[in-house]
Image (tube, rainbow, N blue to C red):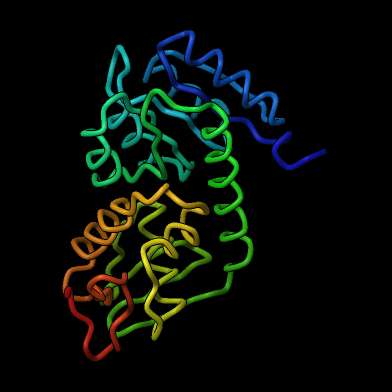
Length: 235
């Protein structure tokens, strides 16, 4: 049995036609699918049976997708792919602490959605398996990949899943400059068709949460790197 065949994707979409064709393509790809049409039903479904990934529409009849995402993040570490009908919502989706893993703007190619789902699941599972004992200390910053925990001066800092993955990727390659395209490929698992602002937004969030302990330095015109521990700054 293929890995995807054992995984269930929860679709949270109140437009029946969209939910139907997304379900069709995911089933063809070998995934189990459950679909609900409201935020309340989504939260209940997550409690009843944790899915491998959630496809979550931003606009729902009872509460918006941001609130649904926030509530799920408080209780579960489930990858979330958000759907939005407006480009101006993108910064809100990826910039808030809810930390959606990815997004697609309507209208979208269902094959692209399936590719994103596969990529997110492929990237998330190996990270947890292969990094069970990996820890990095950098100045006052301590990151435990197995527990997926970040501490600054002994105090735990809550990072969204992709924020954690981005920080770990940079720390694991400290001393090297990583371009935005490299970070997109390594953290998100594919190229965003030239749109690299998701990296910048996530970097801003990590810097804000870590404060003076943030080791991430901007290399203008190129990407990001980790500063030496003694010189860690919010450049």
